[in-house]
Length: 203
Image 1 (cartoon, rainbow, N blue to C red):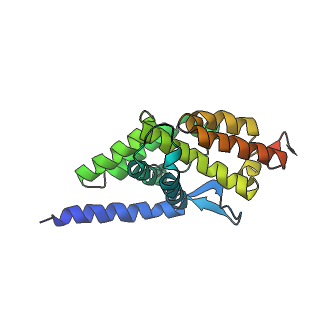
Image 2 (cartoon, rainbow, N blue to C red):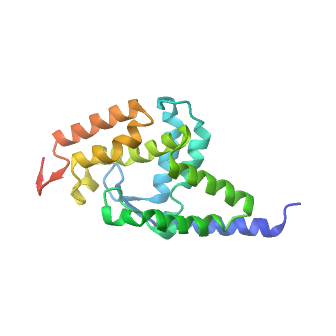
């Protein structure tokens, strides 16, 4: 018989991660109507992993990649969403997220907490094929959304195209040449139609 305190701990964790639905990211919805939440992002990248696993350069376990992507942003309940191009915010991001991981995964029964924490740590380290592909999908998704929405968060934050290439090529190109080539093409198309702001002027 499963002890009732185990169920209580599981439900407490599930109630806590409902807060992910209220964490607003910089990335717009594709229709441009608003910015997405962390929960929406996590669902979307999990679906992307299922659809796009065949484009990984190394064999990956799509189910494990999905698990990582469902878990990877849970820490933002405490740590908040840190925009990848925000140098100041990224300075203490790792410390904030480690504290959040300790608290949030600690809400679960020990075995489940350890399993999810291990998946989160693996995602952060990017030392396995599964975690490298998960990180690639995590970076590919906001570029796809920006490209299809006309570059809304790029414009809002003054992001330049060279920064998109510099920050994303290692993560995307390091796991999927096909996705990186598509990323490059999307960004170049976005530049051509004026979706970026460079030195205060559209290009």
